[in-house]
Image 1: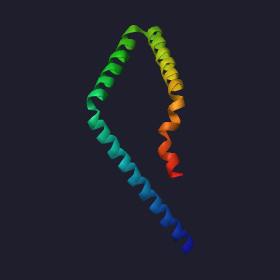
Image 2 (image 1 turned 90 degrees about the vertical axis):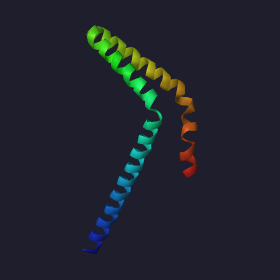
Image 3 (image 1 turned 30 degrees about the vertical axis):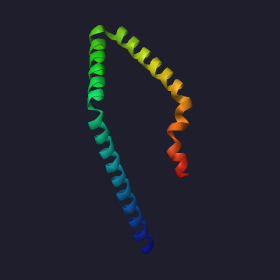
Image 4 (image 1 turned 180 degrees about the vertical axis):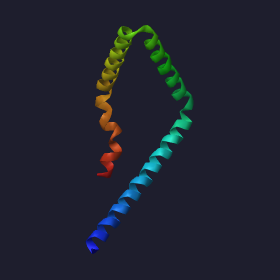
Length: 95
C-alpha cells in the first residue's frame, strides 16, 4: 500500500511539473507573439493569399506551388543544418 501511495505522489509531482512547464512555455510564446505581432500577421496574410490563390488556380497549380514550397524549405533546412550546434549551445552547457 505504501509503495502505491509513493508512486501516486511521484506521478502527481511529475504531472504538476509538466503543467507548470507547459504554462511557462505558453506564456513565453504569448510574449513572443506580442512582440512579433506585425511580422506574424504579415506572414499569416501572405499564407492566406497564397493558399487562396492556389485554391482558385486549381489542383495542378496548387500541387506545383506546394512542391516548390517543400523544396525551398528543404534547401533552407539543409543550408542551416551546420548552424544547429550553435543553437543547441544552451543544452550542451546544462549537460
